[in-house]
Length: 356
Image (cartoon, rainbow, N blue to C red; front, side, top):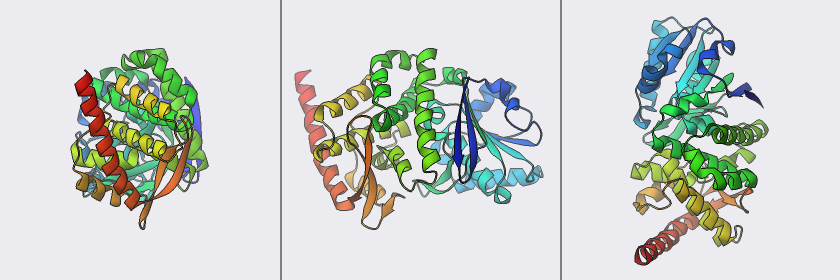
């Protein structure tokens, strides 16, 4: 078992890895808990939940809305929840985001903790204090920064994940390595087969090292004014692709990282050989590196990105694997990039088809 700490303006957060869901009562108040979870997690793990009122929200990204939040508020009022209650989210990134948002806004804020149950949420989404919901189809447009009191990561919960969910979580781990840890990137290159097989010793290192990167960044920049923006590597295009194609978050971010890497090469920041390493690793992890998109819809989604400031937005580039930089990118340049990279990727796909 290992622990990490985040010390933020909105509170301190203890992250525990290598611990069991069954021991959760050691880390949270044992009385007056309201547990938010989804249908699948409740079915699989209800017997291991701590005592408390269970609020089930179903599954799927379409539930990450204010309507779902309103339904949870209604349940909390019905059970006469007050400020002494502890909100506990047990589930993937959607559950963690919703539970954190509910806890941060109900009665102007109550204590809360999270048990992320997917690889993506253990390595990324469940940690850092970002809580929010989608609005009108746009990702995380409404939300707050508020640190969970405790985040417990139980590796045993990953065993019931579909393979696609594992791959999506690995995409976020690649992101962390690409922006901040060249050694972790190399380790993943050498162990990707064991990672896909969820080998315990590999997963423990990947999750812990990812959390170490994220907790360090968040502690220094909780509300995303500077350094924390680097965690958005691959996400500007990723969120747009996710919205317009139906790909999962991790799959879309994978393609977003490929695009951001190509743009980094174009700007003379990233050597072409390192871009190729990134693409190869993503492909080895069975993640997509190209998809046919509706360019107009993608560009419209990018223009509505919450990081936009006027006619530019903060965009994360790589200055070599393990080092990220944030630049203010004109929207016109991003639009040109969409067209150029589309042509490059189509050429590559056609070339591969001819030679294979």
